[in-house]
Image 1: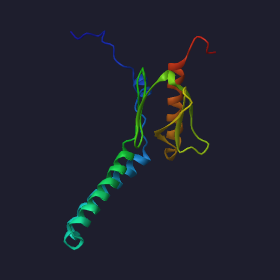
Image 2: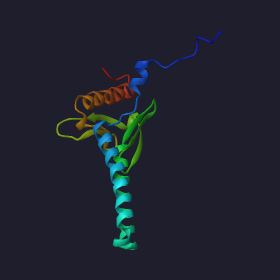
Image 3: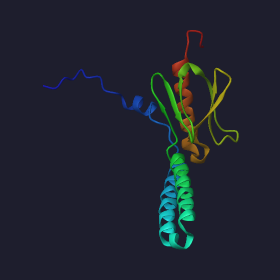
Image 4: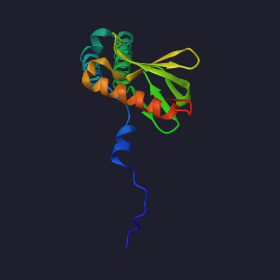
Length: 157
């Protein structure tokens, strides 16, 4: 007989702690990354003899750098758990404890969510982007709720 006392995550809890990932930017960037990579390979293969080895290598390196940039844009995200948040932006990945986050800002012309930190710094969370419209607004609200849940003290009203 199976053990029915196993603690299973509730669906609402799983949704609350789901990763934050943009939709529009992820799709566009992934498609561009593949297209640029394939285009670079075809371009270099067809024109390598005409370009000469140094130019062919330069074109290949440039194509790979652009592909990497697009792929990195497609993989921006923010992962949350009980301890805090890991924000993976274009270049930097940063881990924060919930207590380090003072507030969550979104809208007002901001292209993505911004976290105000206890050290006075501001951190962009590119995993929630304005281009996603209503979904982005809902995701910003979910992130703000997580911050509120994890930073609540006995002094909160």
